[in-house]
Image 1 (cartoon, helix red, strand yellow):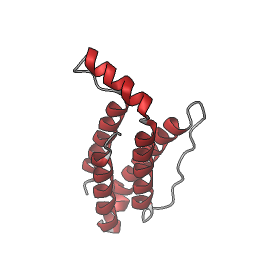
Image 2 (tube, helix red, strand yellow):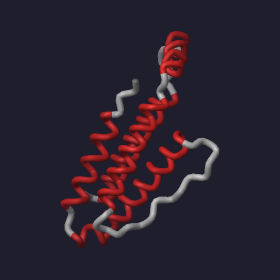
Image 3 (cartoon, rainbow, N blue to C red):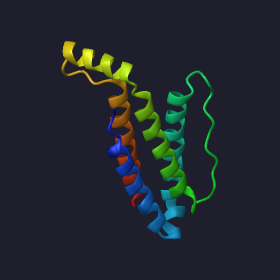
Length: 127
């Protein structure tokens, strides 16, 4: 099973910072940054869970709700990554690692990329 702890930890950290941020900081762009990230994580989760279906866009519920939206979207993506890592896919990934030890699986790459997105958004938000 894929360990998604780095993603959930980064998402929780950013969401907690948004919750603690003053209204002025949220209005200066932190909330918009958080919402953009929540939408991206949500779309990624939907693409894993429902391939071939057009992803739904997360609505803007306001600056004070964005931390919760981010937390939900991040945890949804983590769960989607975990559950898409079936035993069959794990065996396939193991065979790929045996033939090319430096190659990452698609799920691990997706996880690493999601963690980078969260950290970059948090830095841009300034929280």
